[in-house]
Image (cartoon, rainbow, N blue to C red; front, side):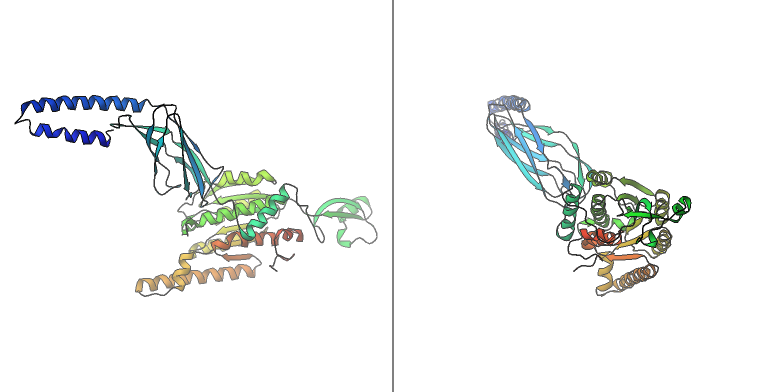
Length: 448
C-alpha cells in the first residue's frame, strides 16, 4: 500500500510531464524518475513485509457482561531498525461498538504494549477478529499489512460479581463451600435419619407406626436437618425476555439472578435443576452441590439467548413432573406482558402447586410501567397507556389469585430481582437454618 511520501513524490513527478511538450528531455527524465520511484516502492514494501514481528493478547481471566476489563496487546520485534506501526483491533460488536486503532513506534529489538479498556455488551461465545497491523517501510514509501493475531473465539459470561446484600450473601455462601463457616441450625429438623426404640419423653409424632407394627414394639424416628433440598429453577427465555431493560435484556437480569441463586443453593448442599425454556425445553442442567456446581451452570447457560416465540409454561411444568417425583421448591422467573400468556401461566403454576412449593417471580417491564404511569398527549399514546394499564392490572389480579391459593408471587424490578428471589428461596427452604444465611434477617426471613 503506498504511503504518503510515495504519493507526494509521485505528484511532484507529474510536473515535468506537464511541460514535456515544451522541453522534451524533461519527459524522459520524469519517466526514468517514475521507474526509480516504483523500484524504490517495491524494495521498501519487500523490506516491510519481511520485518520480524510477534504479537500476543493478554486477556483478563473472565470477560463479564457489563464489567470493565483491560486487554493488553504486546508487540515485539527482533529487527534492528525502528518501526512505525498502525494497529487495528477488529472486535466483535458484542465486545465493543467499533474497532479500535492505535499507533506505535518500536525501537530496534524492542517491545510495545497497547493497553485498552472495554466493557463487554452481550453474553455468549463470539469470534474476536484479527489484530491487523500496518508496518511502514524503512524508506517510508510503502505500508505492509498483515494479521499479527488471527481471529479467535472468546466467551463472555453473565454477571458474576455482586455488591450490597446479594454480594454479602454470595461471599458467605463461598465461605460455607470452603468449610470456613459452620452450618448452624436452630429448632427441630425434619429429615428422617434413623430408627430406634421409643423412649419415655419422646414426642408421639416421632413414632414410626409401620416399624412399630413390624417389630411388635414402639419404634421412634430420629430426625436431622434436611440437606439436599430439591430446587428447580424455571428460566423463561421466550419473547418477553428479549426486551431491553437498561443496557441488558430481561433475560440477562433473570439469568444473573438464576446463577446467584444456584451458587447459594449449591453451597447449602441442595440439589438444583435449571430448566431454560421457550416454546420448548432449551436447556436442562442438573447442578451438583459444592464448589464446582455453580461453575457447571455458568458454562452451560452463559450463551443462552431469548427466542421470539411464546413461552410454553405447560411444557416447563411437565418437565418438572418428569424429573422430580418428590416434593421440591420450584421458582419460575418470567415476565408477563401478554394477557393470553397470563392464562396459560396461571394454569401451569396451579398444576405445579399440586405437588411442589411454587414461587412465581414476575420481572416487571419498565416500558409498560412508563407507558402506564406517564402522561398521554396524543391519541396513540392514549391507546398505549390504556393497554399498558390493562396488562399491569391483569398482572395484579393474577398475583392475587395465585396468592389466594398459597402460591408466592413476586412482582419485582430488575435491580431487585436477585435479592428478592434469594429471599423467597431461603424463606421457603425447610428449616429455619436456611434463613440464617441472609444478612440482616430474622428466622422468618424478614429484614430487621
